Amino acid sequence: MSQASNQANDNSGRTILVVEDNEINREILQSLLELEGYSVYQAENGLVGLELMEKHRDELSLIVLDIFMPVCDGHEFLRRKALDERYDTIPVIVATASEGEDAEIECLKLGANDFVTKPYKHDVMINRINNTIKFRESASIVNLLTWDDTTGLYSKSFFFQNVAQTFDANPDKEYSIVCSDIDNFKSLNERYGQEHCDKILTDLAKHLETLLPGYVLGGRIGGDVFAFLIEHQPKGWEKVLYRSTEIVTNLNLSVKFGIVEYVRRNIEVSTICDRALVAIERIKGPLGIDISWYDDALHEQQVLEQQILHNMETALAERQFVVQFQPKHNMRTDKTGGAEALVRWIHPEIGFISPGAFITIFERNGFITKLDMYVWEEACRQIKRNEELGLPLVPISVNASRLDFDMPDLAQQLAAIADEHNVDHSLLHVELTETAYSEDPDNVISKLRELRELGFLVELDDFGSGYSSLASLNTLPLDVMKLDMSLVRQAEKLNDFRIVESSIKLAQIMGLKIVIEGVETLEVAERLRDLGCDYIQGYYYSRPLKSFEFEEYLAEN
Ligand code: C2E
Ligand code: CA
Ligand code: CA
Image (cartoon, rainbow, N blue to C red; front, side, top):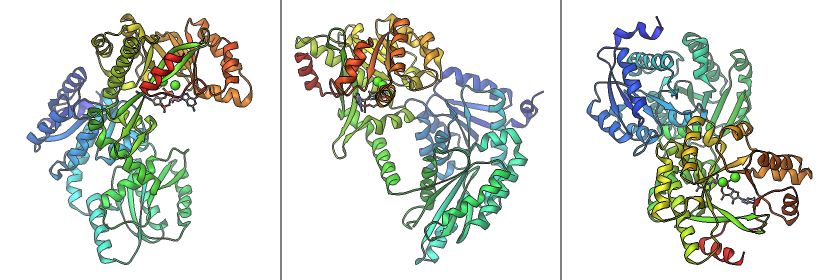
């Protein structure tokens, strides 16, 4: 008998809310949880989830929350939950599609208690749920006390409160906040068990308390996240943190520190700690000890991110997103053979925002699917305009991101937009990047098949930038391969085009057309033509063009 089912009968009277847009997942979870003796409520999106949470507030032992959902996604759900103290006692386990420190810290900052990765592994899921509920039920007693049992540090709310009091009592002193986060603590917990890991937390907390200069007080503000208030120290003080190396290697840990110096008093203590966590999030370093500061640049980046999140819906409604078109030059006919649609955001106050600044944010909160549909529609409009103006009819390709493929009717939706604008499907290409298919290749493959059956063409973007590209050529239904810019850059630098040449041969063997991106000089263009490249997209021929410029370009070429 598994550990999970041992506890089955203990759970009657406990209720769990499952917030998840995928009906099959919801049903599976419900039956799994009922088997364990839990009662279950289901919500198909964040909004319904919020309503049910309010209605059944006093009954709920836990919430299982999906992150990517339409209407109100998991991040938004956590944000709204955090606004109301009455929900503080209900723990949340977040289901993420991928295991990533960034995603985890993001959710942790928003108040999540634990994570599971999809697809759900039943035993892991049940154990996490049982543990979180047990922990919360005993912690709710501990929380009433001031101290965290395990580490001897202040509990979260008391830490915040005491820091605020310290500020009030010492108006002339300067302070810093230091947060620590252990890498992959969750997997340590699974590997070594809770008792061992509790010991790690205790040792680390004790160690840091004595190590930090100007130490005032410390708190445990998350599972493996500590926060410390210290008096402001002269430059270079942080070197002492590297003295944790010994304990860290003894315990086989990797610890990251985020520091906020010259703490401003008019900011909530919890916000200051969040900023230290944002700094930690930025660390992408190797194992061991790593330190990062919350500085002005990071603050500006965060402000921009907030602005992007706040303004995106309005921007879409007000058509602030502008699509540009970058020609692809046909090397055989020496004429324009197509174009790629690239989105830009012209914000009324901020001005030009490049896709690099917002695409990843939209991929995190799910907004990218709406934007991609918009770009698709703009591409259709442009094709129609070209036709009306009597310009050469060249295909336009549109970038697709991973989340687009979560839409069950992606192909049908794209077809509907094309048909509405009366655009021949063969004039529309979908550009797919590696991150779009690496997670759930089977799903992507079947969607690509549907797209091709409907007459659209598929281009594999950024070929050669990752690791699994070679295998993907065999399995993905493709028409075109786009070589990643980095390969051309490298070839230019080393004056060695052998890899580019063999990529061209590879495409030919696989029966694919090849587009080479990022070509900036005549010399490279000629060389690639000699090597048999079909299309070139790059600044040498043209930068991405505004709609009217693209029309002029087509007229000339
Ligand atoms: P990508 O799909 O690899 O697009 C090519 C990028 O390379 C574009 O940057 C383009 O302007 C740039 N580029 C083209 N030729 C040259 C060249 O000769 N030299 C140099 N240095 N750069 C060149 P951009 O427009 O900033 O787009 C960046 C990325 O943002 C795109 O990379 C794509 O992944 C994403 N993106 C842009 N528009 C969309 C969209 O509508 N939807 C989605 N999902 N992603 C988009
Ligand atoms: Ca692309
Ligand atoms: Ca590309």
